[in-house]
Image (cartoon, rainbow, N blue to C red; front, side, top):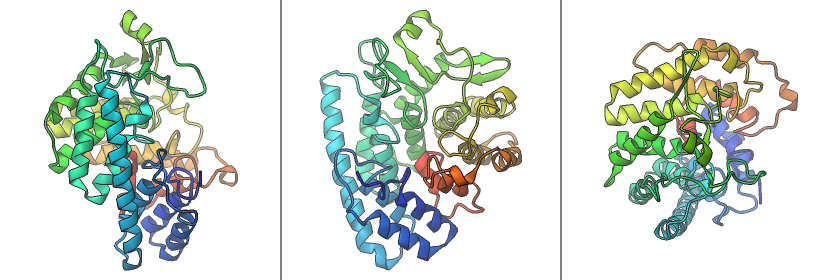
Length: 359
């Protein structure tokens, strides 16, 4: 698998950075590298790899020299999406539990929906939304997104599978996409019902510790039977799995449903998170996925939509001063210097953080 066409850790992500900062020669060189080995439309193609990744990046520019590349990437994205939708609907028809890679942001149909939204392919996007509505329908007393696999692919799954809440791999990814498209005026039958189902589930599992509001990253059948999660306190306040990403998804849902109470809840969850030194100390790197860059990017979008003032300057300082050797960091978007630079860019001309489901 070529890493060049990876948005997560390859040249495609680097191209996105250079388009954001206006360095066209560097962007063009990165795009050449990203497409040097062809562009994948295989089963592993996703928002973060292959044709959909390139489609997302190329949609940031209308340069005439890239018109053919944009068309090829968009066509490939549509092909991948239709194939993945057919597989997902067959799985639902058979009443089998999904793997989170079927629906998540990083590898699944939520991520493909992000690419289609970026491309303006609203017809196919609506088919993705139809699928996400079906995903929220209960199956045998469990939510439709309950996964047969575990959250760690290197470990055996817990008995009976799990529910995942992270923005990157869990149900808050579909929640954010459903909310954002509703905000865009793109909707399908059952759209608001699906948003409400997910929100009610999150309400059921909302936790409070030392005045902090948070949600468990995952749940098992044992957690359901006990009525309380094994996770007893909030973990790392990351974009991918932590309170910041979950709070942003709920803020977007509150905006979509005109639910002031939920918007206040999201604001409070984020504010108490970033003011909790115990949580902040868990951030040990500057990355978008797990570190301070992701917290900053998420905080910037939450602050823009918050009902109460939400200062971002402390998050900027935290990102700038966290101990890290840039010499040892990879160059990628999710875990490396590309992401840290994008998080501190002065502008958002490309809307690059749509790939994180932040807007």
